[in-house]
Image (cartoon, rainbow, N blue to C red; front, side, top):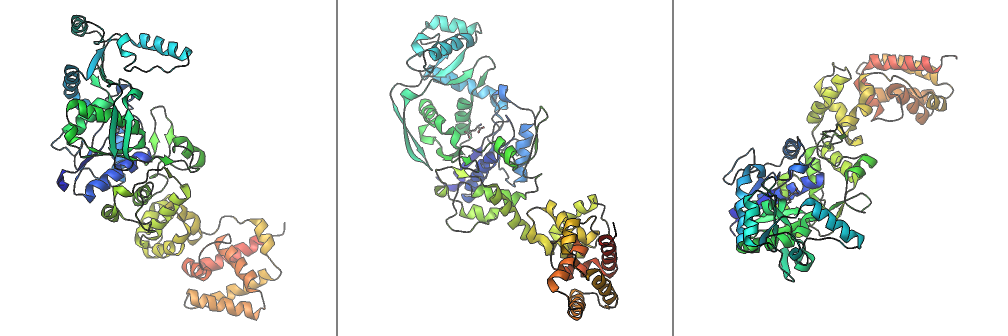
Length: 512
Ligand code: GLU
């Protein structure tokens, strides 16, 4: 197959927000397409009107845009194989369903929902599972048991029917999966799936998916493991249509597992442990808000990077990859069979790596809106770049910068008096007063000169370095954290430093 014949699709259903597992499926399709100079297509599978959730198609589009995954063909991009939304292809599917009836691969079934429910309950009461399959179909109301005239009459009179696939009996279906190898499933374990419903004149997922993959000339179907049970039916549908020669190659991606490795990662895990499982924040139609990676402060490149490694092994210990590098390295043979455990701490680590690798100018730009919110307006961009450069190693998210830098912009609002009492040793107030005097005399206010003056003062007053520097940091920063103290003192300036020394000394020694 020539490379330009590689065509893959991401085919979400707008039935809710896209889980990060869906973003990963889209990413692997994207990487595969780009790696082989193929086409990456977005197809919206919205034939199940009962499960449709308003706004989720837009959500899917926005999420993939945020992740930087651009489609070559799709609802908004257009393309030669459109429309790319199944509800707009409604007229296409019926004829294919009828074709299968003509070939003897499908049949009309007229059983009502009530009849099926009664049977289901009857089976259940006998501790059996009801399955509309080859052992049952000849005792049901369908075109296999009714006369041709009766069937035609019912169809002509618009009686509700479904078209079911007539799964052959006792046949070993062999399906090939790029990740899992050969799979053999006997058809006796498969049921007669509904392919088309007359009630809404719409195909079900299985029929629409196969017909569209065929018509859109899809070469590879890369999708989540949850679709693996449908694979034998899909292979049989290709056979039934006589399209085996052009059947796509399948690859089913491993599940993304909960942090404890037990079961599929769900929204509930995220809610419980406080990490997002959706790319963007999602407001459900009933008003429930789910957290998103974007809103939690993740960079899209970090999320793409971490998703790329959730199920695929680059073949080395390297963990940080740009999208271009991923395209270059991606190899579907290196996708694992077993589930990939999601580690929320590792997700933060990825964001941290992307944050520290950004230049200080960009970080300052990203931090600026937070400063404005805090009503800090008078900071020079250069100074801000220096400040973020000093603390970036300490944060995972831009939103954490304020906590690490607020003392550069305003004096500590309150001190933890318990810590003060513990640190405040005899002689410190007098020392601080003298230190102020010596600071006043410094002409060139720089970390080095400040350090020299402070060191001289501590030595000549025979004070303990650790005690004094801890106390001074407390006065300036409001706690025992932050980057190099002399650099902080230089950056906040002489006047502000003296002010903080006076304020804190007075406050700590106020007689109660
Ligand atoms: N519409 C299916 C989904 O929502 C697509 C499955 C497939 O890729 O075949 O995931």
